Amino acid sequence: MNWRNITFVLALCSSAGALAETIDIRFIVSDDLGRTAVQQQATRATLHKYVDELNSYYRNSEVELNAEIVQVEFSRIKTVDDVQIIKDMAHERNGFESMFQKAQEYGADYTIAMVGRLIVLGKPGCGRAYAVNQSIEAISSTRKAFAVVNFICGAHTIAHELGHLMGLNHGALVAECRHDKTNMSAITPYANGYAEGNCDGKPQPGEFGDIMVGGGMRDINGANKNDLRMFSNPRIHDERCGKNKTCGDPLIGDAARALNENARYYASHEEHAAPAPHY
Image 1 (tube, one colour):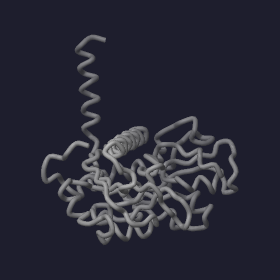
Image 2 (image 1 turned 90 degrees about the vertical axis):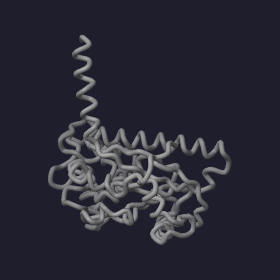
Image 3 (image 1 turned 60 degrees about the horizontal axis):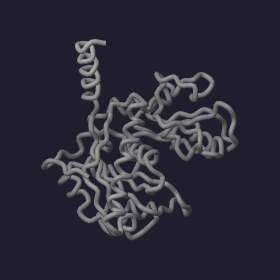
């Protein structure tokens, strides 16, 4: 390949990357994850790794989003209960003082609390989002754009909880397994995770689920290990995606389409008041 062709290819890659909307994330981290300067540095490095993984999920799903960290702050978070933490964030108390003012200051579209231990429904768990936002107004609101994540659960849980804030839900098979149709309540009928299998909690060949199916995989195959690191997209074909090798359904499982349609709203919650610091 000559230099002219190389330049052309690089230009194509650059223009493709430029299409992505940037979402800025502010992390409020429990101070038990940063007791010393060395531990804080290690925690920050891990958060950057998680965000890099998150961006790989977007790329793998053909989603035009790119996440960046605008601030990491260590704070004394006073509970480990997921619902209480979400309430404390909403009311800016118990470690989350001035949360929305700081989101505006740093240009944070999303605020995520990272904790060393999290109790969900009375048991150790991975995360909770403020809500499954189901309207343009809701997905555009900074005051409805926050979540709590167990630090050890990593990028997959961050992606899942952000998905809820962006209007995505678990999907039809989780609704069937849990006898709860609210698992399909999303910003559009197709803004859902997608899975194939049955609800016996035992692994069978061909069973799979994507990021938004998340913990619902336990109801399907018991092991919670066949979840793909991508959002549902019927235009993607992969050997891991069931008998038809199709990673979604255009009517009930096309989260990638929903994310791309609404990307500009996710990225426009807050704008930087000043150049963002580097962490």
